Length: 230
Image (cartoon, rainbow, N blue to C red; front, side):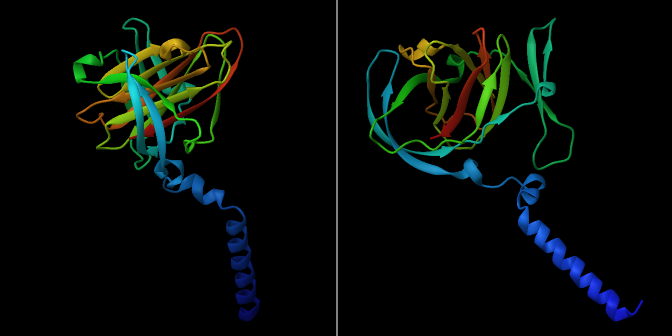
């Protein structure tokens, strides 16, 4: 075959490949490094804080959205004898063996944490959401993970299923404390939502935080789960 013909064929093939990659940008996103996306979006919002004694006030805060990921069922294991649940996750920046985290019950008061409820003031700027919809089957639990950055004093966790006739149960596992389990009425309202403010004057512990959402109803329940670092 004439060398000019060969070169012509190679050029056509190259052009076709470039066109295909451009037409499907998700291919790059699926196998590349994590993108900024929701993990680096920031916002400002006015909230009403409420402590255990029922006192509170309005505050204007800046926040960083989390990037909650649902863990596959095969990454969660339970030791029947010890009663300990362990989760295994792969480090996004490494090809090494997945890391295993035992979700132990650690009292939050021993680590200087406080858990209060917050309400976003109506008419203010809305919170950013991750646009991920989840669902949990009856009598089962789903597990999630999010990486909390350093130098944050609050971690907000917003579980919203918008149906006060149903009830989900939320447990939060920080690296050094366990919070919950919490029911819908944790804030005194039956509104199909659990919105927690986990705080510490010494900064909340950064790293992987895990969340357990359990269904106590007799049918499937859809919901959203968002986190915010403040």
